[in-house]
Image 1 (spheres, rainbow, N blue to C red):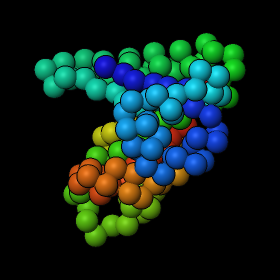
Image 2 (tube, helix red, strand yellow):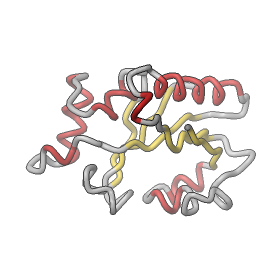
Image 3 (cartoon, helix red, strand yellow):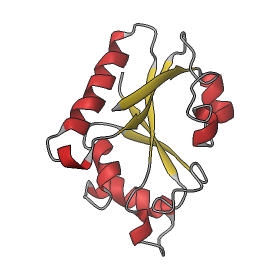
Image 4 (cartoon, rainbow, N blue to C red):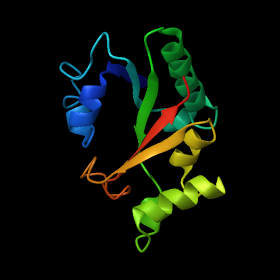
Length: 146
């Protein structure tokens, strides 16, 4: 499965601090804007039985192609979780992300998944998903080239 929505720059600036706010509590009623110039990849998931077949990569690549096919889209963004951060409790999230981006390592498989596909890191968001213990509640805003 893969979810995406179109959002405005104003929504990103005013509600991009937390997942529940940028997705309208997963309803997308008030957050999605049909004329938004930002294409936000919201979620990607593959059932465990089907992992290892590059389906996640194909889903994200399809979303990127879709975004690029819309003339008015100016940015392709997605928030991702630093899924491996819980293994390094003594490292600040900023250092962890920098280490992941500089080394192109598999330190964090989720972050590497996006960086290896050409995404760049825009910002780190503390408390984005407070209940996500494995990611320390943090999220990383990524941008794919249009």
